Length: 403
Length: 169
Image (cartoon, rainbow over all chains, first blue to last red; front, side, top):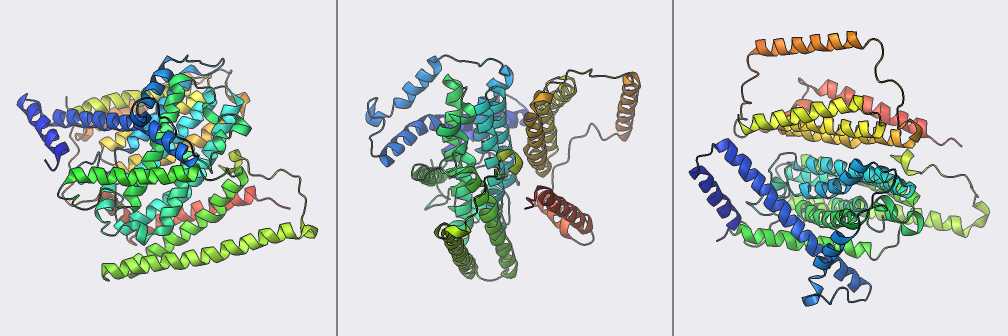
């Protein structure tokens, strides 16, 4: 039983053939079943993630976390779900009811449909479309829409402000993140995620470490997690775009956020850590699923590690960091990677890997120098009070203009 | 009926219904959201034609950029969110006649074409439409010059945006 998923699929298909259905309808039924199984499985993982997140944050904050219900508090999320379902559903006055109720569904759904293109194993792939990398960007755009809908339909100024901040942040950080995705695409010469994983005999984090870090920062910002959690800065705008949501509607946003974090961990694993690749994963595809989830969970842990260790940045710092640092940096890396890739067609693969790694290290050295100079300049301003100009004008860095 | 036809009819009905809602609803934000649904329906039609790249580009550009920009513009000017004025003006019979005539002509020509009822032919093995598109955009005897002109136009628009937003001291 090296490959149970394919085996069950073929078995079901043979039953359907036995019923005398045409092949077109069988493929539709099998596709629908695949969607149900994958979506249901992802949602089940999502319930478990509530426990993971609470347990890990407890460790970071020197607490124990949920530990009463079941072994290690494992049944706590089930109690949470029952609580959320029993809570009163409040629709604020003046809210656009239809859009208000649609927004949380859309927020969770856009996260689940990302899993359609992620290869879980050599044989278990939702869809092998040849534009997988672009598909992820497109789905992200719909996620942005869900947040706008929630913020607008709530008829609440805080919700609208939170949505504006969140969307400004997501649209800005989409730029370096998408360019960071392009670098594995160049290295694999394919936009299909299955091909990107299949061509990673050396993990791309070795060939493109800068792109990996930029992707991770972009993911953190897309998720709206600290240090980029301005959209729900409690001290400023109470809770952000989901301030008016109660009960399970809030639960959907919360579940969507947790699952989104794991999904970005999975995407990081797919693009930079070799996805399902590991010892024996090609002959025993079931192992590949395990490897994939271990890598995805590790990256999810890294995302949590960053979230619970860094203070929040200001909005001008957030936008400056994206447009004045990350975007030029990743554009430089992209051009150099593309040129080197063209120059080195035909050289042995280990030289290719070493040159790519070395070019990344050279860029990193110059970046380090430039950042050091910038920091000295900033310190100089503070140390030299004569030259400080007091400027009371509001800087033009509101989210609406930046987008 | 094949499943492809069922999906096509469903998606077309949703797309057309949403398009109708765009022009009839009085709430501007809702109209923009209906427009998003319309554009998404068109993206699904691209998928049915096995043009995955166009489907994804449609979602990224029209929903991810244009629709969100429109929603932002409407939201930031809250007073125009509700349009109290009349939705049709005196020339609507002429517009209706022209629309019907154009629709009739399209139906007539598609009937005459003869290939409208045929299934899309599958791609030959080893044929990557995305690669073909990419090569076509940068090879000199195909679409290199239009592609470069479009790039320069976009660059000019970018510089123009910077000039408008420039903070002169």
